[in-house]
Length: 465
Image (cartoon, rainbow, N blue to C red; front, side):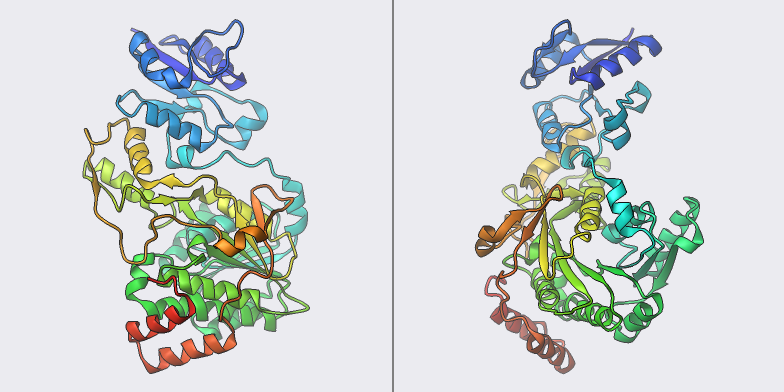
């Protein structure tokens, strides 16, 4: 009995896939296509909204999505329509090679990943332009062994930089990155890995003085909202004072470009983590230098970063446990690590002093919908094979994340870079200044009382819960 396959997408990729299956896979039969556009001489069985009926009618064994340029929203829609069946749904990889060269083969079809239904296809960027900008430059990445930092490192190494230097306080992550780069046969002269914390001012100054980077990407930070609610002093030490240490050392050594990696949680901060990242933004934004150009890049949740909700959901599904959702009404922005790092690297090519760049995160997505898609992408049925359990919001969590404060929206404009907006200067500087940072330092010396420090943060940010 032949395996019956239906292909979603009757464009070039879908037709090439059909041809490859007919030519090389005698045990498979392409029953037809699903497509929202009628195409002459092609067997269109129905539109995407009609998939369920088509699958029942033809007793299909497998569905393949063959739309390399598909947005994650389309893949989510397909999963949601098929949420009550267990028919495997697979996909043609959404990669530059496939998009550019129409290289579509059935052996390359794979299971869905979170990035397929949350992320976007690769940007058609001018690699040559980026290579020209980064060529022969030494780049320092703080937090360079973490999720975002290490992806920035990987992409920089493909852009003919002179050297990428990693500074990270996690010995294990530095070791893991070292092993990865060795196995990838990256020349030892192209990278240098250093263990050190941005909280340690002397170590930070020592590294930047030794390395003499032309560009610094500051990605080191504590980021878990609920944990920082219990560790207020540590959040300030790393996210605020650590940023100050790196900024000050960069200015002292005449670094040409400094990019602060920020977060949407800095907008109307409702958490300690968000407040500390906003303070870091303001410290960077208020620096003035004739040598160092400062900018900030703000974005939301990154798919499959360390501690992300996605790996937790997948683990819970695979163990057949209940998938735990904080609140079914909660909505978040999601972006792939690949795209986030790519856009951060692109933003550094702009030399606008003190600018805040905001990455286009796409649509807000229901966390409950994310849980359903994780379960269905494993060919299981939500609330039948795997239950979804609501456990309530954790301290400091917002119901809906924001990329801009209310008074910032009118100050946003597009840039010439794809999916990057600029938030113009004049955004509320708040009460952040050197006196604020100095007062926080004094508070940390006097006490580790979370309530006292939180009370001071609340005077700066009334939105803090």
